[in-house]
Length: 203
Image 1 (tube, helix red, strand yellow):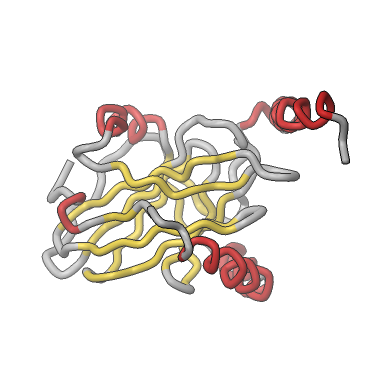
Image 2 (spheres, rainbow, N blue to C red):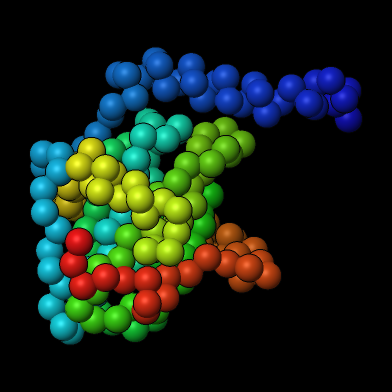
């Protein structure tokens, strides 16, 4: 067993190592070669009545150089790096979104057609590298006030051929993480969710 002083310093050491890694890798501004990217800002689509649009945002938090792979159910949507914005059109109804890095985390959603929904891909401390959670941003949440700024500072990304190949090559590892961490997720007494009323027709 580690001495008390050493155990207490482990979280600080992890933060220090994460900062060092960030500084050492291109100023924390790396973009994924698995995604096509555009220029910052830009308008959002207006969802048609028979579709819902979910926008995944990753503002400037820690874990900048770590890739966050986002899925809807078992479908790979793309990689969300620092300052990236992934816009996904889907069917109304119930879905389960997942983010995968060192571990996996989930967000259940019940979506209305004709609405936009927003989710922050938020880093958190892992064992060897950052993990991520999916955090709803809704009109009733404190982060709603930051949404326009986040949209202005993020660049749109879309899946390319290399990204599709990556998903195929890593399907086994992703499935194993889904099965492992979904069990723990389902045992949580309180889980964040996107509800029909959390969406807006336009922004």
